[in-house]
Amino acid sequence: MNDREKIGIEREVSSLIARSDEDDDLRKIERAIGGLIEPRRAPNGRILFVPRGTAKDRRSETENYLSVRGIMDWKRKAKRRRYLEKKKDPHYKGPLILGEGDSWLEYPCNKDNGEWIGEDFAFLSLAKAGDTWADIINDENGMYDDGTPMGLFKTVEIEKPHIVILSIGGNDVVEKIEQYVMPYAADREPEDYINDDFELILNFIEYNYRACIKRLISMGCHVLIHSYDYPDPRAQSDGGQWLGGPLEIERGIPGPTLWRGIINSMLTRVHSRLRNIPDDSAFGGKVTLVELFNTIGSDDADAGPDRNLWTDEMHGTGVGFGMIAQRFKEEIYKIAL
Image 1 (cartoon, rainbow, N blue to C red):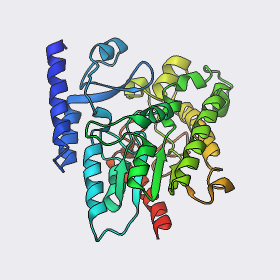
Image 2 (spheres, rainbow, N blue to C red; image 1 turned 180 degrees about the horizontal axis):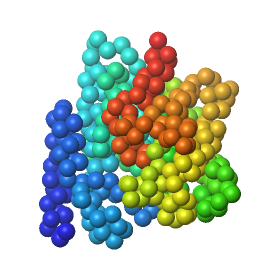
Image 3 (cartoon, rainbow, N blue to C red; image 1 turned 180 degrees about the vertical axis):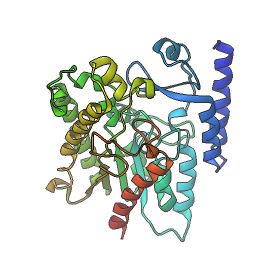
Image 4 (cartoon, one colour; image 1 turned 135 degrees about the vertical axis):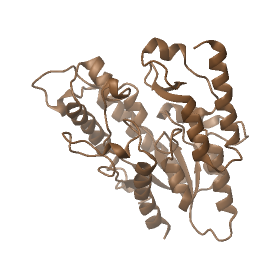
């Protein structure tokens, strides 16, 4: 693809994103964007977008990388518009909810958890696909093009939400997943593939959760955190770029059963760090952990999850995210009532 064709696609996608500011038919815009571009794994483990149909090799993906401002959170303005409408509606008696984090709240390719939650509640999203803890910390003093703050705490000061949903840490693991896994050995159990470096990233994730939660509670918020569900790792030839592919190519580990066992063990260890936070007396009962395991995923490493509920290795379909969002809604109703 030549530069002129790339620029043409970038302009067309930018035009579609601009339409989302006023157009309520996000599914129509989403389909149009999806017909032009598709996500791939960047060399650093992040998400990049390329023209749909680009060859699945690193050179082609790097040469055809698309630069489209706002693509990672293109639905944010529409969500903000719906949030403000609910907030001003005298008939709305529910809580104000702020969400910060990653693609489990703001996924650019199909209906996400944030959209589902926003159907019932006044939900404002700051989330962005691909974000890590470092991104969120670095965004604290940033501003969006519409003049609203990017920062979590700056937004809490302005909006005074009752509940804050934090969906952070998945990308801290995924972007370097092969670095936390040992090479293939025939006699090695799934949990034994995880190396000592993984403890360092777990320490980093837990530290940031606790520090962030402490500050949010001091600002009057109840905080929701969550486990990720067991994912659907796939071979590189089957679109496995973030989970199965790196374990297959970089670590020589064969087959989905072993990939699932390893990654499920990693997520269980992340969960073990989060599950004690709500019980910490320092937080005064103001933290809720939403348990998502086995909602659309499966702890059965042999069978795996129902692939009809997953759009790729890590993200639910619109229906799948709807099932996950229902678990959030159940906890929100408990807090709000």
